[in-house]
Length: 493
Image (cartoon, rainbow, N blue to C red; front, top):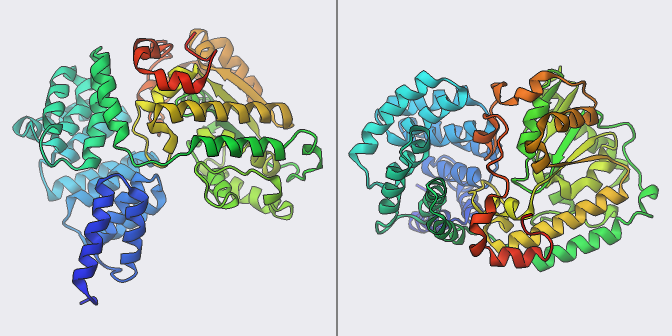
């Protein structure tokens, strides 16, 4: 029996309240403190794993959820949560096994069934997906007003042409009293997406506004703009030649950067379709290193190059490249498409001066609205407020422009609208820039069978399409704070 159990139970409830309110970092901090006193408490280990998943720390989440399964072997929810981690990591066979194990414990569990159907769809197994989809619809039809079940149905509905029914069910379920904030938030993002597909612009934006308001995020755009100003001052062009680099490092690395939702996944899928390249997905290593050097700023930013130990550069470069090569030892090039690595090009240049960088550009209003529509995993604190999105876009662009002008890195800019309007010449240019010969398979990237591990998964499994260009035009009446923050001359063309 642990000391003072009522106090520990009270602390656990406080952490859960934070968790369900969307304060995942605060909840995780309390869970970790409690685990020091209750290291084998299954519900506590499970809760920490779920909070880490919400924060985007997939490796830690996986470890804690595997531990929770050992402590709670008959709890299907732990296995469903583990499957979510595996899906995000692209480990779809392991996700399938976790969901099948959950269903062995709890046959007919609607969330497990819905996830299994979606996993099979992502794997391209249409017949299996349809079979599990039919199974998933049985409990969904039996309990239409359950928020969790309505949300599961909403995820499946666009695949079967039942968006209207799913939107009505989800709106009704979310109006029920006592729906946890975390479920309200996820449900409203999904409802906004359904309403957008149905052409209900005002309703979609209202759901979107409510969803983003529920996110627990802190971002100071004025402070971040000041940090960017200081970084530009410290990393001034005349100082660059005096800074040491890890000479000869990084030839195999291609960084694909830009604001989130600017086309980074599309560019990665094109390069990944080449037989000599491998798409590494969104890798956290550069951002984690920047956070250490920045003492934990959000987003982190290495303001002063003096914070980087020149003697340590070869070791830092090896620490990045060795795990990168392990992703595919046979590939000549491996991509890292963590979008906000664009903030860290000074650090990247000093560690990996031979790397290549593809900067993705997209209409700023389209980009920011697409961010506002998305329920991101992990910490993107600027993404849930239109004015913050606009301010972040401007600061991000300003820093990118400085890097392009000041650094001797090989950098290419790709305009999303030009890529989707005339793909073949743009793809020729991208491949030539990264040093690959043209290959016809890169024109058919959507047939590669590889599944993107980001919000853009659905798009990249289709041929290039143009419907997302100037998507923001129909929402323009709602975008005043965004347009004001972006400033003049950046509205949709």
